[in-house]
Image (cartoon, rainbow, N blue to C red; front, side, top):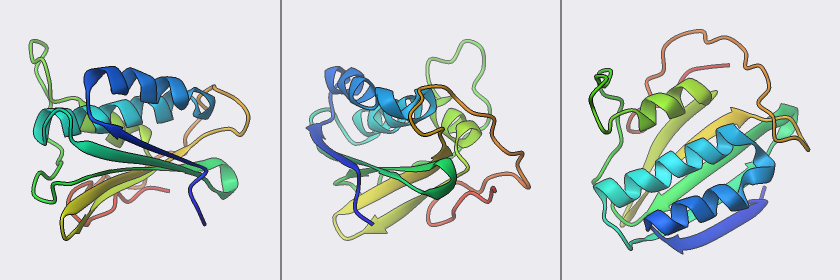
Length: 147
């Protein structure tokens, strides 16, 4: 299956809002997850690095979002809950809460962070998500275990 949409961009704050705008038809959950993943590239890899964002519509209302950057070493991972005064540290917790599952794939010269979300076709609303069976692993090579 080929991506429905592919965006190639440089990771900058201005591009984050552009990604949200382009993904509006996929709904707020997809927009938020894409924003967080591109923002993580800016923060942990560097501003101005090339990023590819791909989106697929799957069966049963699932959407797969993938963000690829050129640094296989800067790996995302869930951290302990951010305090009320913290300015960062909530992005992957948000992704973990919204996604059915997510994970990281490393390759030579790049990494891809991906997630799958439930989205109603043709709407920008956020549907009810089925309950979780267990907590997400959500780190390197370990898919989050939800259905």
